Image (cartoon, rainbow, N blue to C red; front, side, top):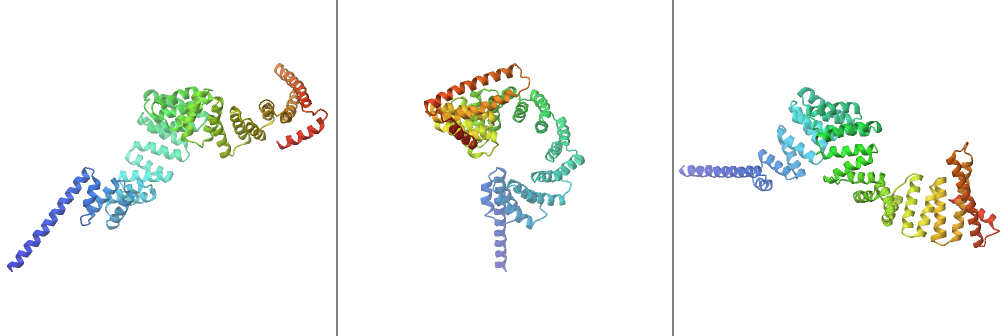
Length: 458
């Protein structure tokens, strides 16, 4: 009997020792968590027997170490075993959000709201999940309920955003204004109003400028509003004012694509090629496939005699784009100019010929003149030049015929008629001289037949 008593005392003491040791380890785990040493806490948690409390702490550590998939595995196990544990469901919802599993997160918040329908946090999160899934009508209903029942004015901007996404700009404007009236420095609502006005087009640009100017006068530190202020002027084609504002954004550290691209386009539109080149080149390194950037950069590069860049830009445009005839005309013409600038005249001629395929009548006339000049002066190929002299003459004759049809021509029209007639006379003399030098006098009829064939192909 005495032996049994001693054994019981020993077992009781041993159990007490184990319980005490586990309690000490759990305290140490809590200490690690409180000091954000989650990796150390995890190491101790795995050494202890599983319990709901330890599983919660494990999920918390995994979440805070951004191991969301592992945290979800543990969290789902907890929720399965303890479905009434609201904290674990809420933590699980956060982990789903971190992995953009909006539908799974929404399920969690629906479950939580079924258990506690008055919890404002759960309601806000559910509304946010609706927004994430583009369910704007459901989100609008939730945000409106929060505002009406609980007086949460900070939801006004969310309501405006829902209306904005539902393409109801008038309602969106009402709520953006309500939100802004509660807090002048509510940049989200101010930005929403400016964007609405910019999207209206020409009828909205003045208001976008007015709102953004008004805000910037009070607070010039908001990067977002400063950018929208510049974009408002840019949208209104006020390039000089826009450039000044974009420069301020850039000098304050905003080197985003939209700032550098917009600066490039502003200076391009203002004819300031050196500045345009600098920013368009930077923008092209960020967005190498934007056709507007490539086109403007190519034009400016050619103007600055950087024909290698011009060739690269227009080569890429031709390879990648499927544009209109006018656009292809511009691409091939500028591509040819790049080659001409590099004194690669044969290639230049071929691309000018390609441009002819997409040109209108007046553009063709100018291209014929350019091609004949290259053949005669740079490539020393008078026979090929003669072909394009004839085509140029045909185009000029057509143009002259159109001028003669003008009823009651004014002084300017009459001057153009006289100049064109003189050009035709000079052309005839030059073409005859060129024919004579090539030994083609007496073969005009057969040559015209060949030229007519060429014109059809063009």
